[in-house]
Length: 153
Image (spheres, rainbow, N blue to C red):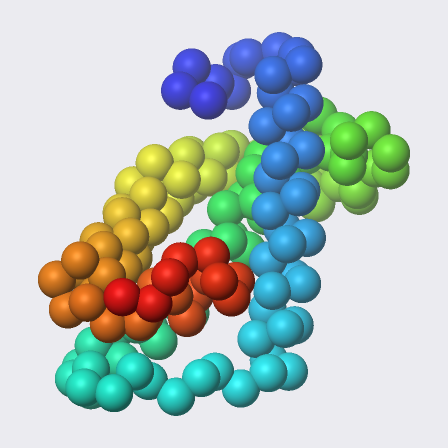
């Protein structure tokens, strides 16, 4: 949504953007519940402790951002007077009153998190996975995917 701004009117594209955001928030809630009720697997043998610690920090940052991004988007939609629905099936409550003074920054925060913070962290995560798969040739990627999707190397 590179050309979206405070004055962009509601459209089908923006509706899909909102629906995707609500879907991401619901998926993040489900994933966090799963994570809190299931132990993480033991680290792969031979991985230095600093990499294990970095992976844990990165994962928790990703969880935080997967909540912050849609919530700031929801706040901004509320501030702009737009309704937030889940594929039109049911509406979510407004988080802010329309044009409530002092809250216009929520859209800027949504964009900063999406464009700069989340994308950089996802890029770091992908680079780490590729490093483990292509350079270290260990099973970190295989452990992340459903069984049998990648053959053991």
